[in-house]
Length: 274
Image (tube, rainbow, N blue to C red):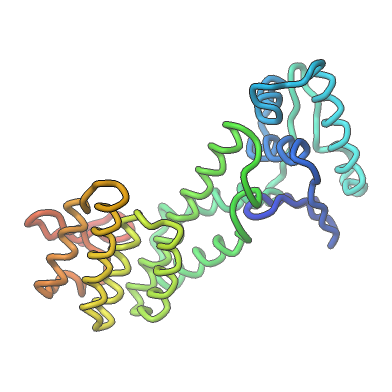
């Protein structure tokens, strides 16, 4: 069975053989078909994704030519599959996907299960790590395609960040501060304005006995927001700073907390109040 990878450089795998589509147009075509996750893609959508606002003359023939090229590439890998997965329909094309063939679909399905899971922190952390291991880089290995591909990439990246945040919650619950702290610092390099990550890092540092560093996390964010965006941290972030300064016992609870104004509300990871 063919395996398609887009959580990193786009690739097609079969029996130990890996093919990476060459050329911007072929990459955009395959990416559009894959992010549609087995649904029909119209010729008009393919034109927009491959050429944008400047399609060539005879663009429909150009689409057919690129489809034929991709179909031949897949056929060389599909000999044991009993038929091509790239199917022609009136007005468009569909890449038929079976369970487990597309890494992004495996990831998003696992993410949906994770959102309603109520397992122990250890088991939840293991599932988070399994899902994150599907990633080898940014979606498609870099920008490709038009609005459809870009929207899908943003959706996958948002889900990835949510799984990473869930993993950090589990590590905090398990007292794995030394493990969470460097990973949080690393992730903040690519997500410098993500307050949730700053909150988790502050809690990890505070629980590790590094109160001064926890305060510095807040002050660095405040300076960055002021200098680069002309903004101030949210009331929730201000609540974290105040809690650290006051050594509020709420910071030692097993779940990361919501600290807004004068409220001290425990927010368990799975959405149930304790």
